[in-house]
Amino acid sequence: MAGARQIIDAPVFTPLPYGLWDTIQQPSADGGHWQNGVTWQDRCPAGDTTYDECIAVTGTGSPPAPPAKTSNVEQTTRGATPFTVYAQFECSPVGLADAAATGSDALARVEQGQVETAFWTGSAGGRDVVFPHLAADAEVLDAQDIVLQPVASPVVTGADVAHALGALEQELADCYRGQGLIHVPRSALPTLAAWKLARLDETSGRLVTPAGNLIVAGTGYTGTGPDGAAPAAGTAWIYATGAAFGHRSDVYVTTVRDSLDRSSNTLRMQAERTYVIGFECCLLAAHIVLGVPTE
Image 1 (cartoon, rainbow, N blue to C red):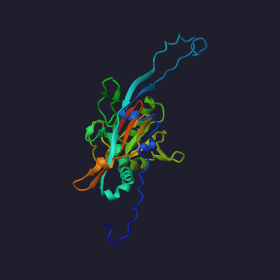
Image 2 (cartoon, helix red, strand yellow):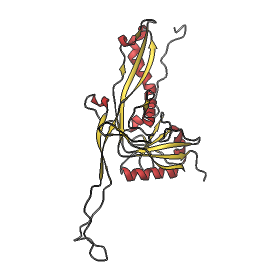
Image 3 (cartoon, rainbow, N blue to C red):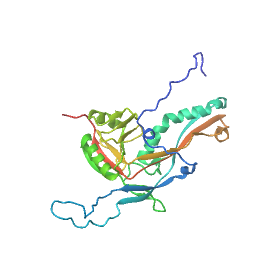
Image 4 (cartoon, helix red, strand yellow):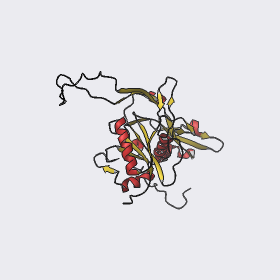
């Protein structure tokens, strides 16, 4: 009951910028079959060089015949599994007309953080069922030997952020050779800013590193290590991946028939949305010390 006070609209909710969904690629999906999970062929080339012995010049005589060309593109079949974010609320049947809008608004306030936590930890509904994810120290294959989860390879531990980010980006360049993603918890952003390692690209509106990789600063990113352990105070884990992509469904709000609690004449409404997220080639980790430069 509102009493004597006027009913007004609440402030407009604005999600924080630089999150996961705003940074990853969002290819169009053909139908809804992706909600069973997706599979793709990952091609991570190393490449090599050769020469023509007839015209090559070494300065010390004719070069020998070049070595035979060999395979230098790693091809891996990878997969990603779906998970669902939901928000549940109660309302009177009198408010049914606003249920869909209320559900969408409630979900909008939580889904970014929940998606990012699931993608970092691999957990949904208290179970490790989200693949692939960031904090992982074991490979997971499905029944067809499709790679659902690569191992996060630590590059450096306990280093200042400039050293750690440099090592992480070099490994990413060696592995992927294209624009990748640097995943950091929000607690690490001031450290990156203090070291001048994060800048806003005014064209795209995204945060980038000095090397040009995109920074994902997730509100739900936990900062835990590949083994899932929380970092020591004053430190955090950050991760690097190749380009990432995602599909998500429309928001679904439960029907009255599914939601009515007749004992209390109350609607327990749920709004939910299904996601699947994957990334290419690399999964790298670095443990950084938080804080400003001392010199």
